[in-house]
Structures are given as structure tokens and as C-alpha cells.
Image (tube, rainbow, N blue to C red; front, side, top):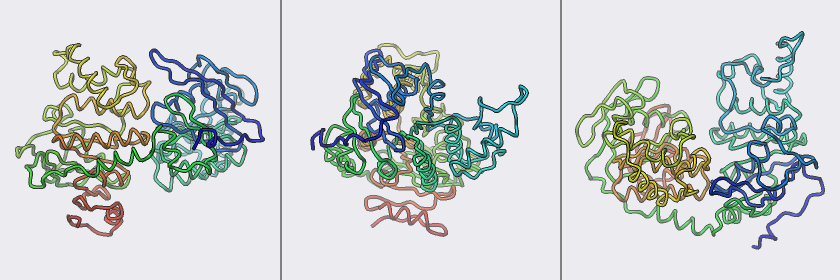
Length: 522
């Protein structure tokens, strides 16, 4: 299929956003090169591409968060150059990010009108704030009490409140950047209902997501970027998944499938091998009930369960980030006390948190500094890692994990989500751990980076590293794990042994009433 044949035909309506020749350069890196982008009123337009393709940079260029080195941005046919997101919002461009930037201690109404409160005689008109917030909530069909504290609502509702805040101005363009990454299926359906309401009101919605099924469900058109350049603009109905993935990766899907097949066909560890880590009755009140677990060298133990089932709580106990109330941990048959993450590191345990921004990386430090951070912590601050050693480690692991850009001095906060995740993985590999706990290591990364991370997990296990792999995506748990520990309602209810486990089996165990015994797949 040629590039021209993929491009959708021009629409009769004029675009509300028309970006031409957008180029953005950072030191040593061209993030965008001569990119064109159009967004029409009353459409949902998906912006697609691998991590590092330039999606976030294009959004920042549109919203005034990033100045452009070349190119023109037009809004409603008029050339614009915003000094910051505030000016863009005043012009009708609002953005809702994955992390909701609201104040949980304030009410829903106060969050919606924060900074734009109606006033009377110089003071905030509380009654008018409540009434205006109620109108905005009614517009998007969200039935919550405007006077309730925002923090009393789940993340999904908070995200919808953020959308209500976004439409409080005369919104013409709504940017949704990874809005569904922390939502379950019902919450996604509610979000999409509201998106369709806004679309039907004539709002142009720019939708960024790594979930292909959701993209095909909600979007009318899509634009694909690769390596900072424009691949094409397509009508969603005219581009199938194979064509989309090929456009994003710049290679045929078969390459990705062969990579996944090699991952699935790896040699499984000997089930009779000595146990590296064992827990007996380990638990924490209110977090996870006492559980028994064994992990052997070279084994990948998957943890599966619905949101809130206790997956992260289990991981934090094993890393010493939380203290257990009951039970104990054994390493090589000897009891150990994991009072803190530093103690866990000293015992050869590494932990990649699901919250890579809040608990993992330091955005204002370089790739080099982030990568050697755990090693430095293990050595103690009185024994700094020599610069030569740090440079050698950084060079080795940047190449091994294909971290882009391969610039050690780049601030890690400027990297794409997938490359940030690779930096976090590299940080722990530098410490040469015996057990690596990975909590949602592929969340929010593109299909290519996801396959690379999955292959890395399989390769590390083949080299003898024990891995605890936690993911909400059951297909990758089943693909990678030698055993699958199933959690439900903060209890470990089953262990299933691979090969032979299917996603349907795991779902059946999760849905089953009553406890499920340990069993082996046939």
C-alpha cells in the first residue's frame, strides 16, 4: 500500500487546527521535522506513533507549551503563537492529561471553576460557582454532587471532572492525552460517551492512546508519526490494524509477531530448581491477606488480577516499601527482614514501580544520573560511582535496551514514556539483581517498545534472573510467565503453571465464586 493511497481525502469543512511544517529541535535531537497536522470541528482524531515518535511534542507545540523552530499554527484560519497553555486555553484549546492536575481537597465545583470563579462585589460568588459547575456537569451528563470533595471520587470521575473544567471555557479543541490508561472497561465507556457528546456539539477532540481497540472504537480519523516525521493522515475506517502497526513501526507486523513467538518459545526453568525467594503467610492488614509464594532463579512468576486485587501491595511488601504485619520472607532458605527498600536492594531485589514518574524516575536528572541511581544508593553516598564506570554502564545499557535518544546527558523527563520505562529497567539491571519485580512495565508504551520489553524479560530469565511480572494485560502475563499467581479481593486464590494457561482460564479463576486451589495447566 502506498503512502498516497493511505491518506484520506480532504474534507469539505475548514480545519479548526491547521499546523504546517512544524519543526522542533532539542540539543542533539530533532523531535519534529516538517510535520503537517489538521483537526476538524466535530471529529475525534487519534494521534498515533511509537514512544518517541513526536506525539507529545506536537501537542506541546499546539498548546503553547513548546515553541517551534519552524512552521505555522493556525486556529480557525488565523495564525497563532501561544506564549503558554494559559493563552491556548483562553483561545479555546484545553488539554486533559493522564495525571489529573486538580486539587483533591477542594470541591468538584471549586475545581471546575478554579481561577475563573464568578465574583460579586469583589468576592467569589459561591452560589454562582455551584450553579455554573452544575451546568457544566449537566452538559457532559456527569451526575456528581458539585459540593462533594473531589478526592472522595475515584480517578475515573476525577478525570471526567477535568473534562468538565476543560469545557468551562468556550472550548473548540479538547486534547485527551492517554486518558484511559488507569480506567476499567466501564469507566472507559463512560468517558467515550462524554467524548461523543462533545464531538456532536462540534468540539474537535484530539485523542492520544496506545490502546488500539479504543482508537478504532472512538476515532474518526488518525494521524501517524514516526521518528518525528509525518507518515500519513487516514480515515480510521480505511486503515486496518495491520496497516496501522506497520505505519507506526516502519516494518511489517510479522517482525513483531516473530519477536513475540521467540518470547513464547523460550526454555522454561526446571520446576525442581532451588527456591530463591519464599514467603510464608506474608501479609499486611488492609493491603493484602497473608500469602505463600515461591520464586526460583530463571523463573518468571506472573501476577494477575483486577484493579484493586492487591497486585501492587504484594510487590511493595517484597521490596520492603511497606512493612508486613504477618509472616516472613526467606532468601536461599534463610529468613531475612526487609525493613526498607535499601535492605531489599542489599539482598539483590530490584523494583520497577508502576508509577514511574512519582516513584521511579527523577525527571530533572539526566539519563546517566537516573540510570546509576540505584547502584549509587547500594554503594552509599560516601562512595560515589566513578564517572568512568558510570559512562561505561550507561553506554552498555542504552545500547542494550535501545534507549532513544542515545544521549546520556538528556533530561529523562524529556524522553517518551517507553524510553523512560527502559531507563528505569536499566537502573535496576545495573545493580545486577537476583530478583526483579516489574509492576506494569509496559503500561503506556507503544506496541514496539512493549515487544522489546517483553523480549528483554524473557532473555533475562533465560540468563537466570528471577522475575515477578505484574500486568493488567493478561495476554502478556500468560505469554511470559512460567507460573501465574491469581489475586482477587486482595487474596492469592490460585497458581497456574505454564505452558498451557490461557487468558480465558485466568478470567474464569478471577470470576469464580469461592477460593480456587493451586493447580497445574494441562
